[in-house]
Length: 351
Image (cartoon, rainbow, N blue to C red):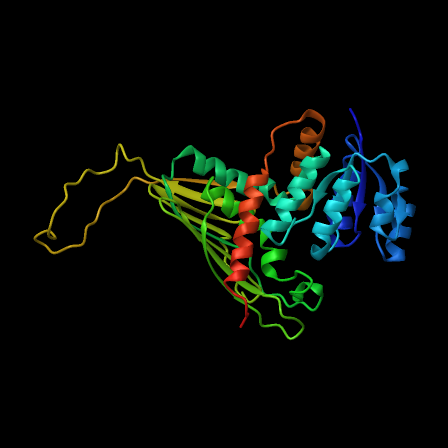
């Protein structure tokens, strides 16, 4: 099995705690040969812990042809995703880029064109696509048992205060570009293969910055489900149902570890004839449906971040070595970025 010689740009929370952590586990397929970070303690740590060649500037890493890289992971801060990704592609490397891969459609399109020009693969790191609960949700939706999806709500929310660069719009911070790409990606998949219309409300109420810490984005379209995505830092009582999905024949509720859904069989449901007026006893329309209820729980022993990384990097390996079809398509990511960009355009002044 070919081991992909890999470099990781950035050794912050994502670069080290997510990417490096998994890549060191998957040593049959990946070998970390280089890292870049401007903080000396982090580069020293990489040399000591896993013998990577360390650079204090990612541009110097990309210029070192002796590394013979198969893959570059861009885990730099958001505002450097475009610059770092295009530089890595132009240096002749396949690239995994952290979310959000880009802040605007124009930037994303430039990345895609650069990858094509250089004959390299561009892989957006949308690891929540491999969330076991979401994969189960999609299998239920695709089965058709809960009917046509009318409405879905996805809420990645809690109560949290921040005082780092994620509070700054200038540095591409804020809930919608930080946490938002996870639920927005899932919403795009549920919505289907069309660009949604967008209605959004963003709020910034943080003494340390001007980026939004509340985002409510609604995706809608003709003959399509209405999907609400909420990423709030003000939810003191987080909702137990991260997911709530309504269909014509049933519905689903649940979170990352447990799902419950119920549905009825239209063939055995009571039959009715349309009546212009209520019955003689003036009652509301009422019937007893024979519901089938089911549930699912994830394996409690799973390390969820590692599970998501396993799914993503297995997919990436197959794309890079076997030219396998993409689970996460560039068209889906394009629609996600367009939706987030539109949400920001609709809220130029956050209040």
